[in-house]
Length: 81
Image (cartoon, rainbow, N blue to C red; front, side, top):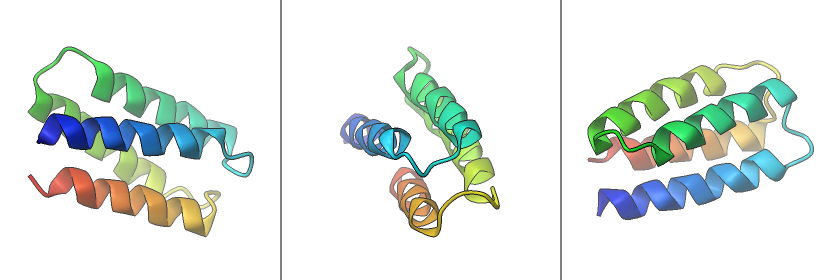
């Protein structure tokens, strides 16, 4: 179940990354998050690292509001397990 959620989160992150209004520094952090979630580490370690990176992103003052909402939704999805 959690692996399915991770794949869904990666898909949403890819869509956010393609948005032209998202700042480059946030896109870089999204790349790091995708890499973390795609790694061969234990699932709980991947999710914890991604949650930390997503939390940092959600506090970025330059991020568009709707992107912040998407990131907070992703955090919620990953935090449920």
